[in-house]
Image (cartoon, rainbow, N blue to C red; front, side, top):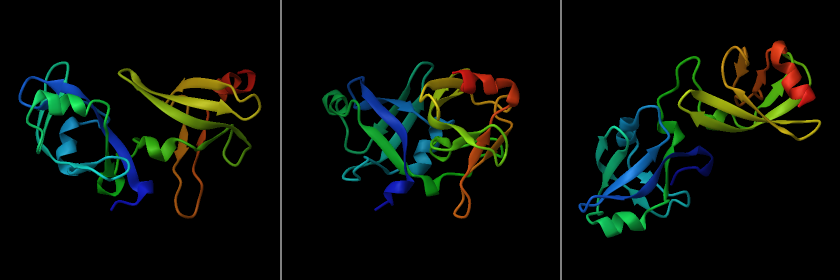
Length: 179
């Protein structure tokens, strides 16, 4: 059994495709084929395992063939099921790449060792890039800012010894202060 703090959602089943039990997938990995290395995938409660037999990338959809799923009806019954993997099985990200689970919850500072002015509450993945949802400490308003080095020149991830943080570029500080 996987330690629940290491469970990361890597895909969601969107419904059946065709008559042979293929399932349309929304994949939350940079490279969909990486799902094959993480199989078997599990549900959040870890009650059910799903082994991917085949993964096909089509222009507008990613299709998965799972062990034991052979009909459209079986595939459609799994619509909405979220699939999780053990984050300890992931390949470490590149130097300037981060996993969502590592960034959500981090405080945002105006300067290193400065006061906390906001907290990262979500990351929205868009084709143009990731957008951070920040909640300000003073007004509790949500602010959306691109997750780019221009906006956040310093990102320090949490370790067993230190709490991580993001430093916002002072040019964009008014977005959080004036909210």
